[in-house]
Image (cartoon, rainbow over all chains, first blue to last red; front, side, top):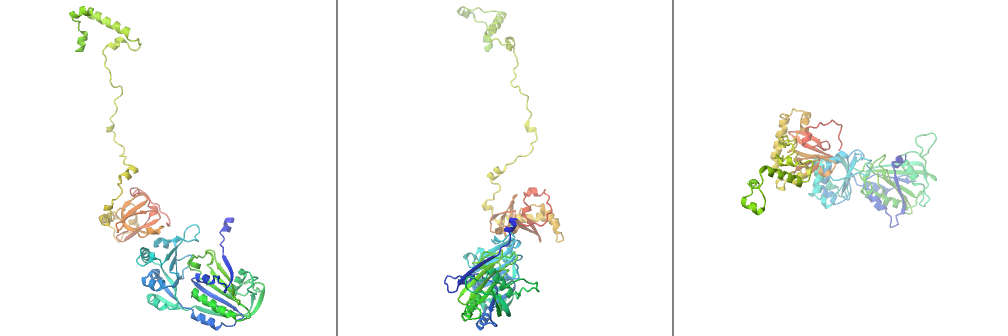
Length: 353
Length: 223
């Protein structure tokens, strides 16, 4: 009986409370560490339309490229390495590959390439790798992690040669690839991209005004509501699930946590795409500016979701999917520059920073 | 000669000196016998009379042994493993470790396999070729490691120079002698367009014993 209890999948929730004015706050480093962000959703209470500077930030978020059927050995192309990887901060992720079934690839801004392969692909590829940390009993997934900026992976070196021949001739790995670049780097990538079927996408922005919403009373002092219930309520609002819990409807029994107030209106904005941590930082800055003026409600919540099928999570740590591959964080900001940060991961993940 | 001196009569001039009288033959015999009887310790087994009589003495009492060399020897015992290792008959000297030297061996092997499969026409079924290859000898084949649990073996290609029970010894194009364990690896052998994959884990027999072994049909093989 206890064996089953031990194997119950666990979820992790790290809650932090600090202030932007405190020098020791680690928010910026925590935000930087989640390289691949899928969705940012914000909830602005008592607000009918997005403020103009927020709109400006939304429009300034860089577009990302989607390349269909990119052979992964192209990421090791000398030219690409020189222009994109070594200069810095191009990041990319394989798209449409499921982390528990297919082979997934992630290229991180610091030049690390991480391949999450199933057993057959790893045995055919022939490059040193480690079994995944989340294997149950038998090794069914392997992770090959390569530092492209390291001297051993310089073009022409033995390690580089082995990886390139492995990806070219032994295991021809081809996936759809999402590529994101820092502003200004786009033009140099066009030459690289022109060989394949690629398209440019802007992040999708959706906003929704909610009326007559019951919300928990959120204050920046210590007696705020339970993080789990707060996150549940935030998720319900984002998914447009009504929290009324009326007796006539059996669809959901989610309730708004006590103590609660009534909001006449609220604005829910979500941005979907491949977002970089820098974009998230900019959004946080703008919301802080927005909160400086006195408002009816003095809080704004911002939730950032990572990719479910990404091979890496915070800080390049391995990520997997058991029942749900959530890795997200939720930031609750107040007008007095304090914030509450909740970082959550699923079963096949390490502890967030 | 000495006997005659013993039995000769005493010369006349010595008779007076020694003070003895020569006896007649019969008297001398009788005297000798009685003297022996008195002086020899009495032993019931040995009779002085029989001892004195001439007897042929057998120098050997054992039965003559059969001639061993006539029997057929069962089997040449051969050397045991320790002696073989000491003699280093399985080691290839560095000056012999050259890829070019083994290319004629590879050609011989190709000829051998083509003859084994009766021509190896493109119309042959792969199953037929496989059945033949199961019992064939692979010395001289060019084998490649296609898949392996250990990633560093993948991609090793060369001519097989020695096949032992658990390993293959191949020589690569760079004149390096590589030792590759059979277990947990899949090898690829190509002959005239027929590509065969050998699952090393199931192939762990000596080359000589494999020709007599029956291979069971198993389901999928996972490394």
